[in-house]
Length: 528
Image (cartoon, rainbow, N blue to C red; front, side, top):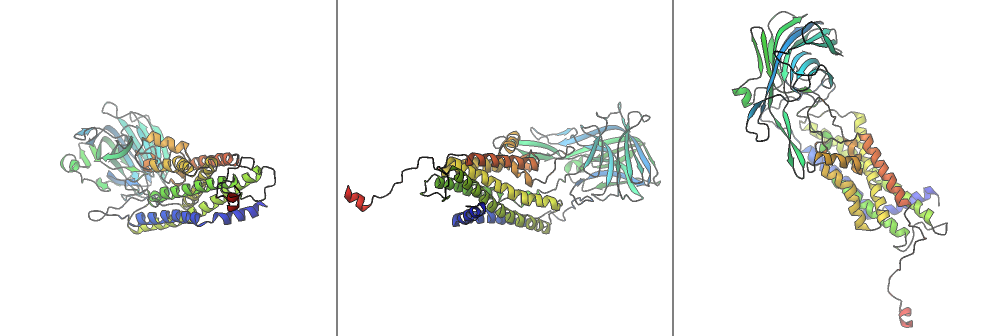
């Protein structure tokens, strides 16, 4: 029998009601639960919701700080000497009962050139940070390290930003005479007049609270940074008073209301800037958009793994004669092992194709529909590029089909239904399911997603890890330890190895056939 004929016959044999129902249940679970969560995910605020910062490329960003600013033309510069950077952290662990002095690692205070005061507009900044020295940052994602260390009255830092058309250059000095260029950025399309000045920002203090069997839940507290500057010189800007504004929402906390308000104080040539918030690539209000449309994926995976494992045990049973006949029908060698292995491989291909089509339809429906529903409910989402969307949809369909092949191979090899199901669920579905929640220590979750077939689900990750942003980069927060292509490669390796083991299993006709039990015929019974 030709391969095409065998494929057609096995496809027809595969379409039994039980398997078709399993495929349908998996697809309906993904679509129904995804739409239920996405369409009921609404934006709600006490009063009008604050605008979520969106950068020029459509990405959702963080852009909140205090800004003391004035005009700057196409050619000009700002130079300052920074003599102090301090801060406040409210109610840190372990007892959460005190307000303490201190700076979070990425607190910022320095100078900035910005296209107006609108959140999300283009900018370039040269800043001191809490623990990372001088940094040159621009357009939210870009970060270049300058000199290390801190700042004090005895060891001040001089900072300078120079504009020449669309080109912004950041330089630093320890004495105001010898300057070192940190970096240069080109901000295409800057208007003739921009805003230049001093700023301060401080993101929340992120700590992790242990839960479950060692998992971690994020806790974030209010912080504030204070920078002190003197010798402030602006060249190329219009003369006049400074403007002092909050970019984003500020001065709503008890600390700001009763102790130290965010803002700017100018006295005797010394400028003190206090501020909170952050300027960076990850919005504090950003949503895990793709994950929010796929809550049914773990359940669908379990359904498919169970179906595939049972299909594998059924195949092994038929080829060993346990179920009475061999599907290969036309065995051409004395033992039939070659044809039996051929049937194992053909059935794996049929299963993979059926599951891939199921996943493609399910994810292809729920992802765009769910994202559109959340946007309609007022949820501001980061843009999902077309190629990334295609990667998520096609990638998840491929991952589900490969997981099914792994479970099928386990079923062929183990030959016992419940044993194969437990093994398949434990190896494939369980690691994916338990790492999606803050149950295990982050290190354990990371290794589970590096070593098991669940690594393949990295194809759905759209969140990006940025070194200049303090976040909980862990599987329970939506971050996979492997890039999507590496996770998919690992899963492909699993599918190939398990398939080879299954195909080489001793399931041919050379195996001793089990004794078939049944009722004795009347003739046999009467004949004694």
